[in-house]
Image (cartoon, rainbow, N blue to C red; front, side, top):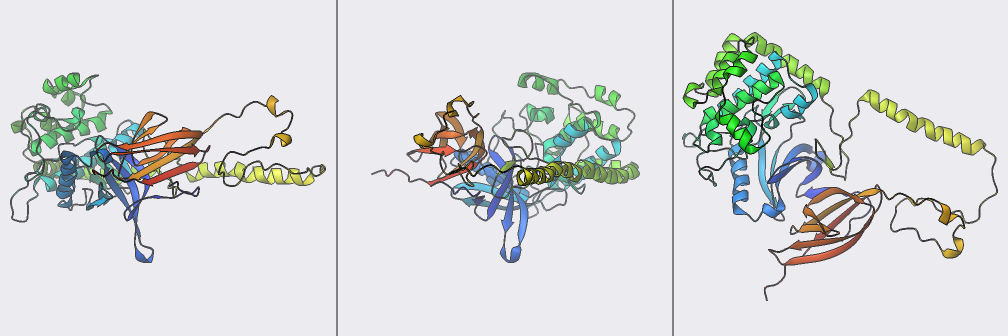
Length: 467
């Protein structure tokens, strides 16, 4: 079944996917809308377990762990989880959508941040960690939650300046369904504590080490650890001496407390996020208050809302096939001005120019909706047609979804697993092979993609019977 030419949105149960925010090794995150009666609608973020991993119990349990742990955390500085769901064997987490930027993107825009803004971000993140680290179950037993992935990508700044900590996907807590094998590293190498990178047991003080690395990067615009290979980064962490960092930012008194978090031995770091937060707030409260306003002003200056295209899943952020176009009001005015002027000019030109004799059977140049290539009878071809330069073939967009999921080959090349959303391909005919070895599914489709058009394919495939 091929979708009609009119754009059709991609739905996941009750959620309409709007744009892809990002992707990782085991999941993709989409901006989506939840609709309800009486015109109700709500922006949410949907984290989808990649379809080819849905049958792997380890990855499915990791997603369940993330949802279960994060759903316990109800704090203004932590991204809220709404539900863990499943639709046609696709597993997902629905969570709060934070409209704004993460710190990685803000650093790309600004290079580094002012002292008061960094201090404010530090205190707000410490509030989130203090809450998470001290969380207990219904029976009053500590859950011993450790985030394990504190990094600029996981600290979000909402458009109104609110700081949000996200992604408890690899958080460690008592009672997890999955366990980390001894010596097996999880997290981002650039922001790991020495004990985490060595695969040792970790506690809340490991998160403080990682947060201190992020804070130094926000102030200086440079990562603390660098390296071309994983081995080089690991060696940098193992042999790290914080004295060089302390010398670089010695003019900032409050950073003396943060530098203590970079001690190699956990016993020499502050005992908890709450202890560190209270110490800095007591001595630098005025700077913290300045930072709140400064961050709000900064985000309002740089933030531009992502364009929402109904019925077409677009990409937000870096690395996407289809980039989101953003315009300020001023730029939008200059963009629309020629679009208004040109039609008026052409209308006046064609109205007042000398009229030629009517042409018999004028050819239709572009039909409103293209269904197949135009066929020109031989006796109607222009004799000079062969002398015209060939038209350059453009590109179109192809979306493919199947139930159950399948691997996709387009003209023999691996395109990944379904769902595939708005993949840019050459205009023309393509052969698509769909297969799922687990269910014994294999199917071949011939489809034509038209220039600057979006073609969508949906197939409900049958598993092969064992008999």
